[in-house]
Image 1 (tube, helix red, strand yellow):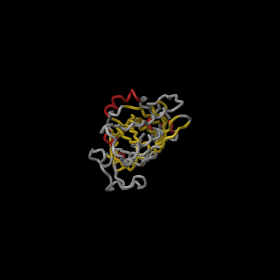
Image 2 (tube, rainbow, N blue to C red):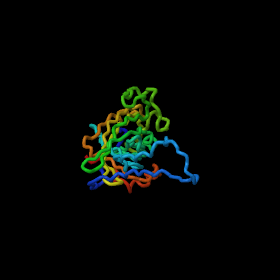
Image 3 (tube, one colour):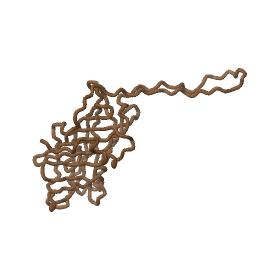
Image 4 (cartoon, rainbow, N blue to C red):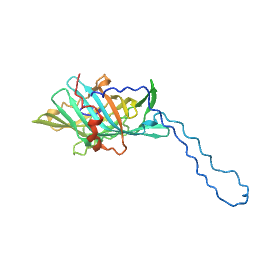
Length: 291
């Protein structure tokens, strides 16, 4: 769901599902009881002042989501010149807070594909610089299947914004709020463009990632759906004037089936290195532009 265009293939084979996993019921623990004292009758005592053990909390819809999920998403972009797929990998950690299911997202690495003999790439450091805020997700049941909807959480990368949701991106590439988020010594984050062995350059950009998804728990350990991306970007500079016209605003392809999301449940100790190693076992092959 990002870069040269923005971030986000073919979805995995569809999985039949007729009903969601039943949520796990909460269980109350009996309070510990001790008995000791004199053999004679005790003196009368006042009624206890402590509160009785409360009833167990009601089941929370979606509590079976809690845990770590490996993340794969594709965003398909196009303009009048180029068609691009941005394939992103990372994790979604679902937790419960104050009766809500919270989604905390983390990105690890990404790939890009175009319909032309041009290669674009983003370093892992730049991908990992995208840190969406944790947010509650909406959980309901549609036709017997658990649905999860994450609203957009505008996330600046390569620039600092006091109000990421409403503050416009600057048009000045010298804006003092621009920062080197990928640590490579260049402003913003760097996109590498390779046209040929003799023509390779860099594009320096700042972005506001605006990413949302709707997905369904089709198996106990599998979530599938689609993503919507309205990201914005500012071209800060280029390494060579020949690339000065690159990096214009891109528009997501209207067919959302070209922008799938897949989440697979993994152990809590998985990290980005483990995800790289297990990528092929979890997700479909890297897609190509097919339209």
